[in-house]
Length: 246
Length: 132
Image (tube, rainbow over all chains, first blue to last red; front, side):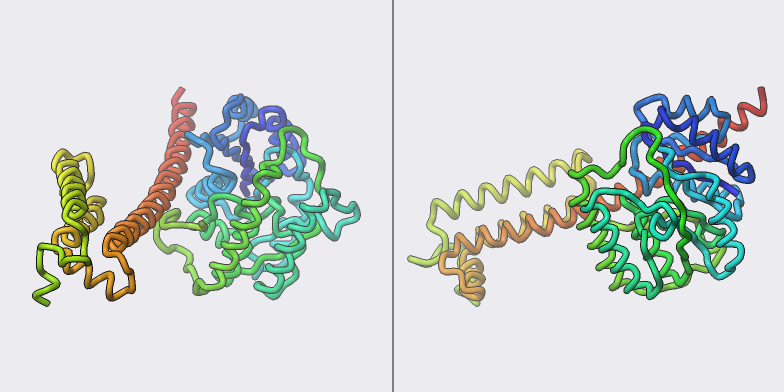
């Protein structure tokens, strides 16, 4: 089992995040993907003694995460989790995700939702409204309950790893990844979790970018409706090729 | 058909003499520059094709003004010189679209290269650690 930790300029938090995964979820190997950081993220992660992939320049969260899935695929991992490098995801809850995906075999990906747990998710009104809009659209498209499609706390099995290693959106990938699963007739499911306030750094989504975020993802969803659904057979040719996302 | 192929502009229609000369000079220059860039390998053949085709078509329209007049009549443009501009803008849009498609492909290829490099470097580092 592999925990992929994408990190862009997270030198303040990365050592603590790696440490807490090793402590709270010892069954997971940790892989930090340094997405072209300009600070000491790479050195900090190396010092923590885990595998670190260093991208030569910033690819964006989608590109970084996909590198992790490609690594997981090539190294034969059965499960790969995504844990943000800023400390907002609680590694102790990887157990919850794991239980869900193992107890429900046709589910190929599970992701933590911040809605539905005991502690409510506090955020700005605009952000909650955006999440709710995407949730409504995705629920309609996939015909299943989706409440938190922007959550980056995820666990994938081998089939989903293989799909994502081959095909993953470059930026703002979370919503599209759920659609991608749906389009390839792979099931995904939500699990309620609580999330913490980030330990350091700031959200990759600033106000300036949120407009682009909304339009880009809406366009991707819309275009996606006109793409054929198809099956990828395990063992199909090499991962990562072709134009992905937008 | 014969009228459409006449080189000299018909009175009152087509481009006037001076404008036709300028149009011919400019499009010839464009064609020559593109050709020279391909010859010096500053421009790959695959990306020059659209340019060569566009400048050749514009040159054709500038030389055979009857063709231009016929074209502007056909689409309802009153002034033939505007038809020349419209054709030029049309080609520009086509070229820009072509570039956007190319950039998308290059971005994707660059991403894959960066990812492969990062994975290969990690593998290499692991081997070094094991050897020492």
